[in-house]
Length: 290
Image 1 (tube, rainbow, N blue to C red):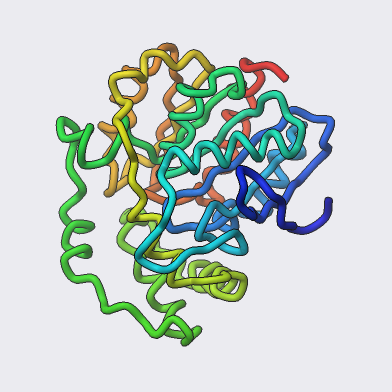
Image 2: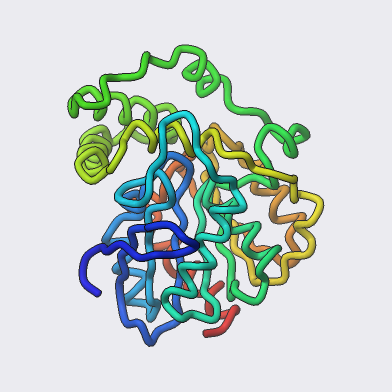
């Protein structure tokens, strides 16, 4: 199945791409809120596949080439996104899979492990927090001051048909989430933003609707029910969910392992971390079995 393709899952069209041998244990990558599957770097996917994993990345609703809706009015909930992930496993005739979720994708991963435990072989949560942000984690460290300041000074929405303006907007949205102890790789951010723009069916919906989705009933009080082997990977400089959020997850999910990533903020794994992250994901998935 070379390249990406559109599949029907849970009654909607979702764009998927795979890496590796379909006979290998599957790992489903779930991107964060407002991102697309491009945020899972192709080389990272290939490294995971080289470790004997059948890697599936996909665009969730309102991302990339998947189904989109009117900006500002998403007609789906967080639980619908969970059901989409389960339906994707069905599409590939997978009884279960290893789950890797980033930020909002990690929230989906938590609910998958809680509501569909038979489908989750292992769980890796990146840049995550227990339960619903702002509702169930008020006891944990707040958003860092510099990131809160950037929220208060957000630039106006761009002309969504202006490629250069949208790229600028996307890059500046990522800058305050990155670690402060290493230079922000603006060139890489611009390359990615350009690719995101070029393949987005509706870029305005992509950067608005996912943040408006109803999360439904909270689940932090259920985290102790997660039975899948769990790995928590978290930047030590995460300004969105400071490291205390990772410590809480590790405490509340039985047997969870925690790996801190130095010089990493609230961002997808920088290439400098892959030599640590890829073997850690392999180990936790080995614990979960095929």
